[in-house]
Every structure is written in C-alpha cells, then in structure tokens.
Amino acid sequence: MKALLCHAFGEPETLTMGTLESRAPLAGEVRIRVEACGVNYTDVVMVQGQYQTKPPFPFSPGLEVAGEVLEVGEGVTSVTPGQPVMALLNYGGMAEEVCTPAGLVIPRPAGMSAIDGAAFMVSYGTSHVALAHRAQMLEGETLLVLGAGGGTGLTAVEIGKHMGATVIACASTPEKLALAQQYGADHLINYRSENLREQVKTITGGRGVNVVYDPVGGGITELALRSLAWEGRLLVIGFASGSIPQLPANLTLVKNCAVIGVFWGGYTLNNAGVLQRSLRTLLGWYSEGKLKPPVTRTYPLEQGGAAIDALWRREAQGKVVVTIP
Image (cartoon, rainbow, N blue to C red; front, side, top):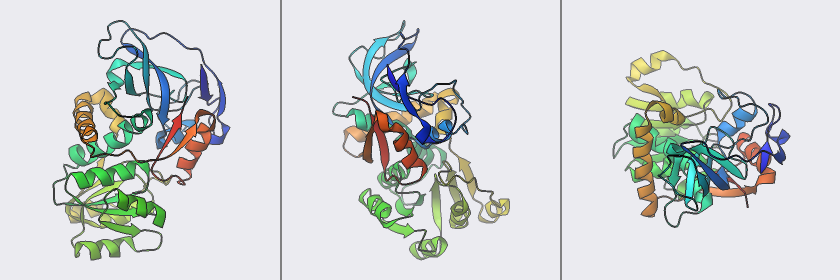
C-alpha cells in the first residue's frame, strides 16, 4: 500500500511517498481503507522526534482517519466490512490502509463525509472533554479561546457557544478572527495588535473570564492566567507556539484559580468511558446539525508533508485534512 513515510526525524518537508506491507487484522482489530486523515499538532512533534511516542522507521504520521472497513479480526462484532467508520490511531493514518483496535473505531453517522469524519474526533473530542469534563464550564460563564482560528480552537468556540458561554476569541490575524466569528464568537481580540488583558477587562467589566482554553502556550498563557476571574480555570491543551510557559504559582493562590491539563488521548488508557460518553454527545449534536467540522483546506496524500508544515508554521486556518483516493 502507498504511504507518506518518515525515514528519520526532521521537518515535515522531509516526508516522502513510499510503500508499506498491507496486513490482516489481528484478533480484536479492524482493517480500514483510509479515505481521509486529519492533521494535528501531534503529527508535527512526532515527525520532529519530540513526541513521547517514537515509532520505528519508516512510519507514517496521522492519528485520526475516516474510511471503510475492509476486514475485521477475530472477536470483532462492533463493525462489519463495508461500513463507513472513523478511527483513532497511535500513528500511521497517512496511508491507504490501517489496522487499529476495534475499541477505537466508531461508525460514521449517516451523511457524514470521510473528510468530516477525519476532522471530528480529536478536535471536537479535546474541546468537549476540556470544557465539559475538566473545566465543568457552566451556562452563563465567559470563555476565552486562544488560537481561536485553528482547528481545535474553532471547535472550542463552537462547543462553548452550544454550552451557553459568552465566547471571546483570540487569534493573530483578522482572517482567523473572522472565521471564529462565523463559528459563534461573541467578542474578538487580535493579540498581535491589541492588549489582551485590557481587552478582557473591557469586555468583562473588569471581572475577568471564567475559563481559558489554551492550545498555544508561550507568553500569552501568563497573560491569559492573569485575565482569569476568581475561581477561574485555565485549560492547558497544547503548545502550538513551540514554547512551554513557566507560570508564577502565586497567581493561582491570589485568584483561587486552577491550571488544568487536558491530555485527551490519555483517556483511551486511563478512563475510556469519558471519551465514549463525550463522543456520543458530540455525534448527537452533529446529527442534529449543531456542529460543522471547520475543514478549510485539504491536501492529497502526496502533499501530506506540506499539510503538516502549514500547521507547524501556524499558516492554516481551521482544520487541515489529507485525502487519499
């Protein structure tokens, strides 16, 4: 089968097309013909060799896919050959076929395209678990979303509005802010041209925000922490800026606030029930027309390295998906 391969850790541009051996599924596994693969920041750091998982070479990046079941292993009854599905992987999604445990494979709802399916699980799952489970955000609270023009940030804006929050979107360009507004943001802050703290004070009447959703990291994280209200919660989602912030612990004491880590993928091993309940809720919202995956650009498999590079350089708006005919 064809695959986009990483032969040595480096920049996304070093990825090349090649072939891997197709294999039959083991007991409890599902073999899927991949039609689309979502691109995530994890792909960037995995290709660069900075992720906790370091696959043997050559490997294909890609953590979430959508396609059609080709074959099921012994004991699998949850899906059947020919069924449209979406699935999670440790890696390997940018290839014509994948095998993955059946517990990580979910039937796609009627009417959901492969592109939507490949853009759904990680971004929406991360945002919903972060806001509903980790922050336990309440209707009427104020949510500040950093990196609101990216694929994950836009899902946080969309879910935050659906949960009844007042959403403040923060991004680096007018184009990204316009996209966040389309997804329901009530207020917009361009952190490159505006003072984040002053704008938050103005918008909230000096109270601050209840929840911060932060997939960016770097210096903006401390500014956001200082913009929290009493008993606010800062959700640490990731570090798309490439810089891991060092936060003054005294701020958590003064504001009686919390800094909360959100490693969505960790629930597959530690508490899969959280993911299952979250995805049931999200798929219900999708079927009701309340969610629209923010896919703004697709790349063919041969250009998968460029897709990952666009995410790394923070040039992409919304969600990027690699398609595999």
